[in-house]
Image (tube, rainbow, N blue to C red; front, side, top):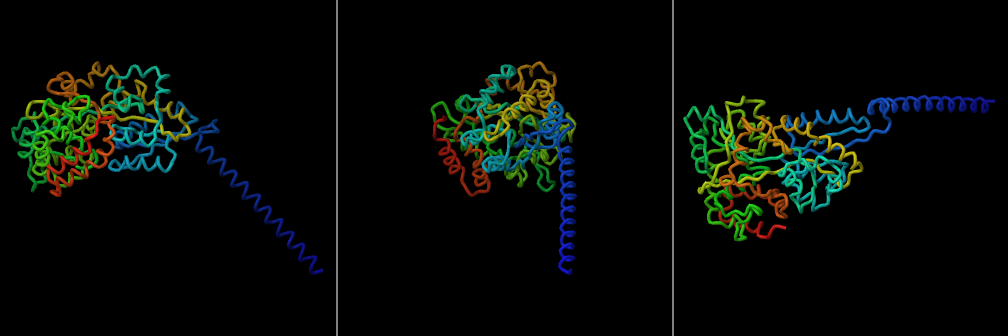
Length: 443
């Protein structure tokens, strides 16, 4: 009898456990349905996610991009877009790591500085099959198509904007000391010293010694090579030797160090884009050489008129060199949604959407009608038109994205320059190392 009641007790317990399990399973299923409904718009059951790895993050740029992404999602309810932002100083290394570890990235922000590395590692797609079917590709400006195809003539990305350097200066600080805007690198150094007072934390120039430091180095050394720079191979002279082997290179590198030591904040040896722009906007520094995407960031904090822009400084013989670089969107070779990724790229690159992004962020537009837009002809953008219209004084060169050496130069060049600026290397030793780095002929 006891065994019989004992068995009935076990049956009841077992039945109770089964009922509890059924109830819990029902709740879990209900919650799963709720989650699914929250992650997908009404009526959409299979929603895919596209992930974009952004390598040029700043508040203005990310906000504008996010606005366009939201518009795309409204038009494409079956696609969700996730923007993956990286730290600016380590963006290239982070993106290479994400792609190398096969983290699911569909669209990669490609730039002149990381193009070579991404292609050599097989991490981004050849976009030729896509652009062949895109009717707006032929409408891109020559500079935009040159940037997109700067490596072996193949389009690996669609630029979201073009980048060309100019001089920014604080008119209020210049007028207070009755100083003229510098037209040469020597004048920039002289004026910078007049504007520098270290005890008051006031400096003449916003130096860049961190990520992207090689840009200014190229500009000053090319200028001191006079008219001997090969515009098609701008790290080389017409005789085939590198620009670092020229007699004027040592004079240029010494002036480069003096601009840092005598006119710039000591901490700027580690500065990148964001630190430069912030120091200029808050009045810590009076001059800055940067691309047009600095304009929108400065305008957020400082009314135009308190500051202004001017063409790049020239060398002793009155020649200045510039290149028009690009940054934009490429497709990861490991993406599982390449067609959808291309659909997003063409959405971002459509004329109306691109021009909105260009005006929001200050990048030079990729379409041919830029000269017809008053917005890009006056004010802070005016020096670009002036430089482009005077090729004798301002010589445009090929970008470095197609050079095999550029990946190594972009990644390791800033460390080499800091060794020189800190006195660990002599100028002669630095130039010898740079000459060795570039001794191979361009591919």
